[in-house]
Length: 408
Ligand code: ADP
Ligand code: ASP
Ligand code: MG
Image 1 (cartoon, rainbow, N blue to C red):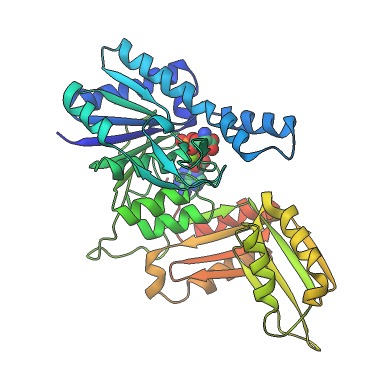
Image 2: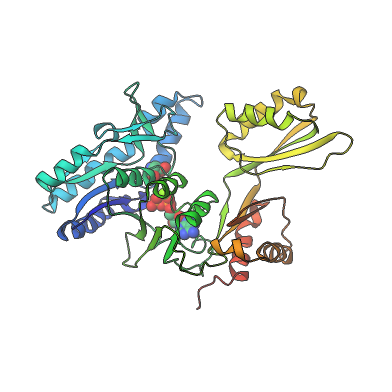
């Protein structure tokens, strides 16, 4: 007998039939004698609708009220799953973030989990064998008592943090694909499931657009040693285990090809080339909580240079404002924003020891006539910025070039 956290994403609870299907998975684990906590997302599309309503109500809405609105989607599915489980004769109770409580930072709309008190849930496992159904994505700001949310995709983080707090043996992530694939299976039909992957590689996949797990959830799992199993709620395939690297195993050179269309490029031209300029610019961006990813600065000509960097598309306007307000300080001529970009990345732990991956990546893109606008690397990742309209093609040819296509 063990303890399990099972998380069901939006597609897996998209309607009552799917909630019944999720309940059957829960029943299987309860019947096997496990303590089970379930984390649910809102029904597919619901959070988008709620976000849109807030924008419609006022583009400059109060973040605390945004959280009050968008947290409601998970409240509904938690209650519904508890009802369906009870109908199957299983003791179950739903919990909102504040009822556990899941204490978070005060950064409304992108709060971080600080602490989860799992004592009550553990008692209920012991005393009544009760399944806990927890609304994902939401918590409480302990200072104000207000509801917070964790940022889009945050239910994965709820599940992993809860698994750590409950000292669960495994955190299962049920989604609409049977695991982590060598590329997004919607873009590369020949992509195949990766049976086992390290936290490090999964972090890079999540950070470069492989949205099957949220980045923060993987960070949390790695830091707290929570093994993950990503699997489909619709098939019985064995899924993908995400866990510590196994040093005895040969590392694949390239494990996955990812793409990300959620970033935009900002270029400042004619920037003065002297110490302190980049520091001033990126400090001001950081003060507005803008996450910068790639940065490229060109060689200077006649004492001026160009700086380009990428930011999440939602932050383009704020970034442009910051840069424009600093034109004089930076001695810069102009700021240009470009939302027509995407990044394609190769991820693989074996890259550390195999030269030539970068060259093959560039040759493959060149052979397709795809121009590379920016490049960034880590020891186990190479990312290239390309035009958004060729990103999917780039993923497909790279997937083939690195022999990741499943044998047909
Ligand atoms: P959920 O609602 O269950 O959280 P998401 O939509 O957040 O599901 O994540 C699942 C989706 O992630 C899949 O439908 C798939 O299109 C996409 N995806 C992107 N990259 C990958 C990958 N490398 N492996 C598997 N799925 C991926
Ligand atoms: N419902 C939230 C979202 O769509 C959280 C989640 O599903 O993980 O972003
Ligand atoms: Mg998700």
